Length: 196
Image 1 (cartoon, rainbow, N blue to C red):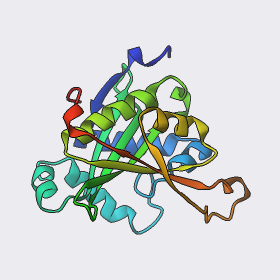
Image 2 (image 1 turned 45 degrees about the vertical axis):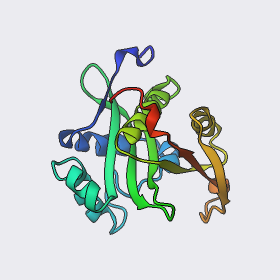
Image 3 (image 1 turned 135 degrees about the vertical axis):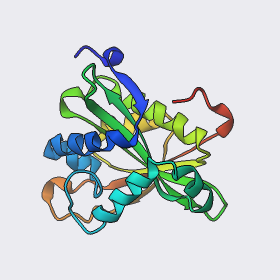
Image 4 (image 1 turned 45 degrees about the horizontal axis):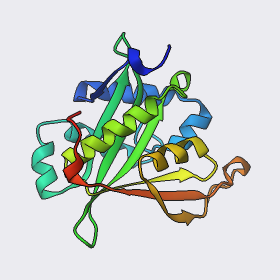
């Protein structure tokens, strides 16, 4: 594939959730480790089951109501689809409620299929996700990234994410010895470019 001009970027609907799981299951072990999801793919822990319910509710007509009364654990997902309507990458944010200073915060995650990495898809997904967050009143996005994942760090910095803390990696595998950076982006809701 010659770049992302052949792709359709859109906000996912409930019917697309199976494609998210399918894409996550297709990731190489290295890519899966970078994304490190407990909610996508096959069940890995007990949290997987209530997360599926949260994903379904997040993509139903109840989302707008719940966002006003309990803005936690609601997922917003944008994706990149090829000409055959196959999902090749996705980015999400999940609401984490309000901070002590009354700011709506959300955690970010991005996954791009191994065959589609390095083509600017992650860049477009992140751009769309930031707009989607602004439209939905999110004040701050945050994420964790391995300190040795320089491509991801560069992408996040390009969009204004800043390093706020470094955490020890508690993994016991030798290849996982990189530290974990927590990065955040403060959003300005007045700069919404366009609707996703």
